[in-house]
Length: 280
Image 1 (spheres, one colour):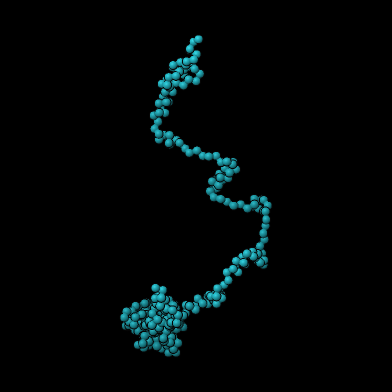
Image 2 (tube, helix red, strand yellow):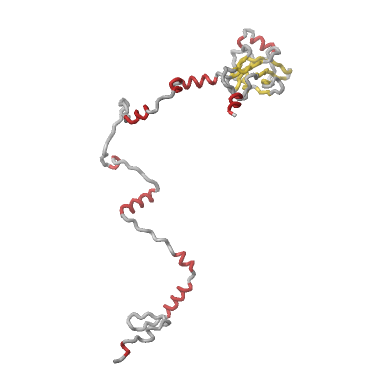
């Protein structure tokens, strides 16, 4: 018995041969094959990373893939109603302005579980606007003089003094007034008001602005605004006087030397100063 059928050829078992035996016949490598092998070994790793792409998983349902594709193409989601596409609606609800809304009983039960507080009964919602308006008129400055325009000799006084305070309107945040000047004054003039919050230790001048011409009054009318500090002492006062400067000189109206005075009026409520003191 020959051993040639049991032992393979040594050439076939050589690990260094680099040849794969498929049918027992030696396959000689071609010249082009060696070049391709060499090129594959010499390619840098960056080439593999550049050509490598992440695989995309296929959706489990074809309809889902179609839906995703439509959303991607449209760029945003859209809602379509069945009747606009020729289909029938599942249900139709008609609303009428005369129909009372149907409120579930559980809503009323929740409202009954929260009874109104005593302060809510004392100050109903309808009185909020009235209460808010009353708070704006409680603590503010009040004039200590009668409005000059109410005097029957007011226009005569304007002609004599060249300038005179007409009236003031006081709010919680500012004081707005009107000044009357003699129309016979020269064209170039400066009209304003000088006021103080600290008994003339310091003062501020505010320029008045001319108002539209009114043929029914004597002289010209100007308007001014004094911005009062938000936190005034209950004993504080505001003193002011009006003036006009022109080529003829400087003329003042200081209420016959007494100045026009506005005093702080307190209604007995807690002042800002005392409230801040108790808060600390």
